[in-house]
Length: 180
Image: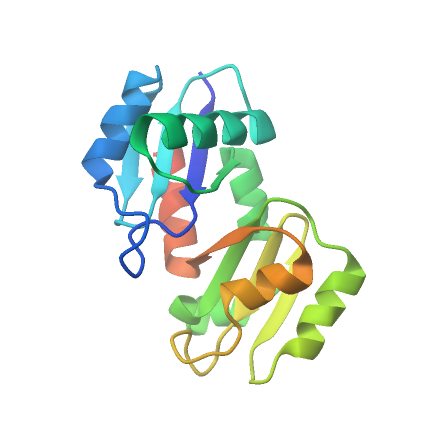
């Protein structure tokens, strides 16, 4: 059985997309997936099963969540090999070691072009630094994430695609959960 890591966008953040993780686990099991596990309360899932993969699985889960749960959100799905590559490609190893809570991986629906990444870099008004690798954007927030002007809407606007971010601690915990 294939193992999948899924990241939901804007779940249990600021009063929107509210869903209990127990309900999410029960729902996925009801769709025929096995070994469903969640991490934190922000829509981080690891599960096994299903013939679909990648974009097909994302669309399937998005449609079912909308229809079954009334939850209109994006799903970003990766397999454990892809997730290990996300970790290996991190262009900011010092931040991962020294300040992992201020290093974000933004999982994207589509890979941005170099021009889109340059446009985002030009729009940054603080000390944040970003690099794109495939369908992920890595962002360092040296002054913290909460007060930064480098927000997800700004990132999505310049990259022309949807995304959801997880800090480096969560990235590593999800890898451990998937390989556990």
